[in-house]
Length: 214
Figure (cartoon, rainbow, N blue to C red):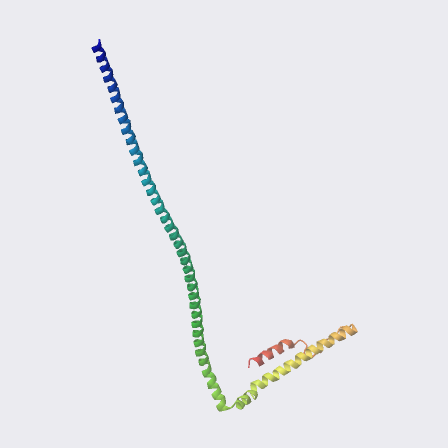
């Protein structure tokens, strides 16, 4: 009876030890899992910190790139403004050059016209010089005497004087006859006029034309 109790006690002790050993294994497993979880958490935190550092570095690089892009855009805008200003200056210079070229062309044309006019004047002066030389040699008084004592001039002037007298007489006769008719209320016979039936006005105009064409 005592031996069986001892055996039972031993069995109970073995069972307890087995339970204790299982508990120890479980605790060791939990400890290992906890340590693994801790290591994983630490690794995750380190990776997170590394990612954060990388992200911060990347953001810093991006900020720098953005600043460089903004500076580049500013430079491009300034360069664009300078290009536009240069285009305007170039267009202004082209306009000035065109105006200068136009003025030069006008001056050249004026010079050419001046040269032509001078040549024309020179060619026209040559006969005048010859005429002046002839007048100097023969005398203006002689020429005037020849003109004034011309028989053709005498006849033309005499014809002009007669035509003027006839036209004046005809107009005076006509005016007087009108006054008589209006005053006396009678018909006046103009057939007795010396210029009756003669167109004295046309004759005077023809005489003037003949005189002017001498």
